Length: 402
Image (cartoon, rainbow, N blue to C red; front, side, top):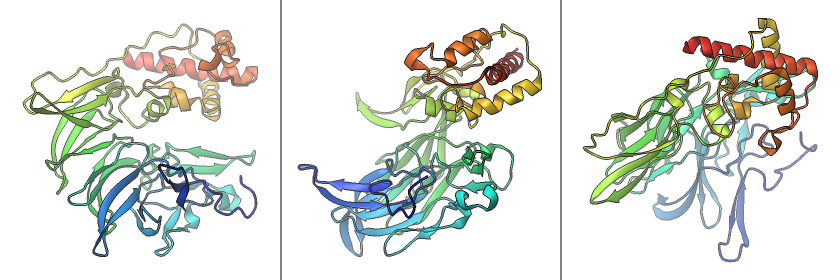
């Protein structure tokens, strides 16, 4: 949905350098011109000094959402190199001279014949999102928390496109969802090692001078790896999902590793975990944990949610099926999670806090909660179908818990 023959649409999807003292423009680099996938480069920018052609060079390392690692000369913005560190199908690679993407028709869903289904990698969530990178300045190794979540696009009757970022959890063996911790040499643009996790949406990374790499997982564990070999040296229960990055401090002559764990504080993070994490083991309240060598404190307890008995009877399955389509079509899952399974954040789990009756749901959709809940315009039949879906989801949770 852009104007015909649009060029790079500056400065969309561009890394931009400004003079820190004057604000004067210095240089820019457009990473994804004509972006139809939501691959903004606002995340994953680092500065480092690395050897380029035998000379120590100050560089910008960019690891945006599009699955590539870029290296730019920090002073001039000159493209030095770039390569994908995960599977991608929106581009076949980068032009070795200019760094511009060589687009792959396989990922251009809007050009598919008859608008048929197209599977795209990475998803709009990115191969790397906001989670922290880590860098070893001695060995020039970059540590990337990456996600592989195939996304399915298809043109609807209205001419818009539906997208399903959960496609990797649907059981298609050719398109699986998973996470990887990737150790990458940005100078040679080659893999050093990688560790795979069953569930995407893992946490950020910490590298220490002692040669360790720490990362938390969606399953609720803090893992320690050998920075050189990638061998896993330990795994420690955190009692809740970890999305943030660990940090390290010295206190009283001891080194601590500190990491936040438990339900994320934003709706986007919490809703994303609902399909790609064990809900029971991720539902713990947010906590800040400190680990230390020789620590003997007990493992934090895993959360045990209790689902109340719904105040109304189940609806027929066909009514709930219609409501599921409305729930996803109205983007309710962005805040409340897929299936109403919010793991925290600013929006409640609708299986625990089911609207008491249909009239109350109508009032909420109509704006009764003010700025806490946006107005959603649905006709009476659609609102009833949505309520049927929420009621049945609450009953399923209650019966499983019981």
